[in-house]
Length: 349
Image (cartoon, rainbow, N blue to C red):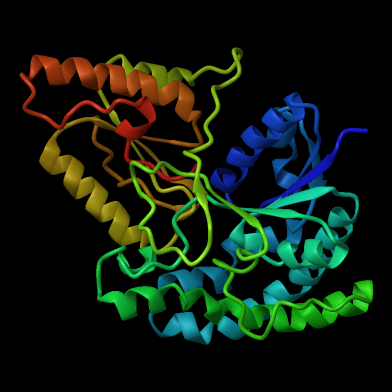
């Protein structure tokens, strides 16, 4: 029987698609692969020929709750909404932990991301090896602060301390851990204030699934890790861009802007984007994603809003048109990207 690999993820499509790519590659190599993710992703996961084991479905559903939106708005509301957010998350978290525990049981290897960091402990308890995957730079470094601080250099001490910020979310696990013990008879040993960004890193193989051209190894990570490059896939042959997008693209070159699951400061972000496009005068295709960017009431003809779109279909089209324009402009615009995917300003969709 092939070795059984379970891949655990929770989040937006951008947190799921790379692992569908990985899972399909592992399956083609002869492994028995199961993707553990919320139920709504079943059609997407199965389109890659993979099995879905539902985990965290209820927990994923609170992303649009009022308590979550209050956290996103910031200010005093962020702190006042924490008790309500913890109450909403508690029931879903207990189920999530228990579902992951049972999914790990039938595995020979588990793959997890920081949002499912406790899987490292569940695997260790069962004596199963684990692989930790980061889709963004998350290991502490003295070279610059976390992306939450804009990745700027604030001095070695502040830079390294900034990577400890995620510990403030740890209390959400406390009631969940009690419920987990009641449901499974097992104790969740993750400590009092675990850091989701680094938990399990010392006991797991660490893969950084992003481009070293965007973020090279700073040389002082406290854990061994390998930057693999991003995990992209080409769209299936029967997939096509929508007629609306095709019509928009034939009218002229366009850039793509996507904010994926970024919900923080969505109004300010949208304002900045529209101001920048207005000053530039070019054409842009924008996806709102979870971030909830809203189009202006008087949408300019040079901007199109759309839902999720296959990057592998869209980016080469945009890049090819932009490349021809650069040559015609005599090189006055930015240099041509060597990878079509790197030519867009984008997040996950």
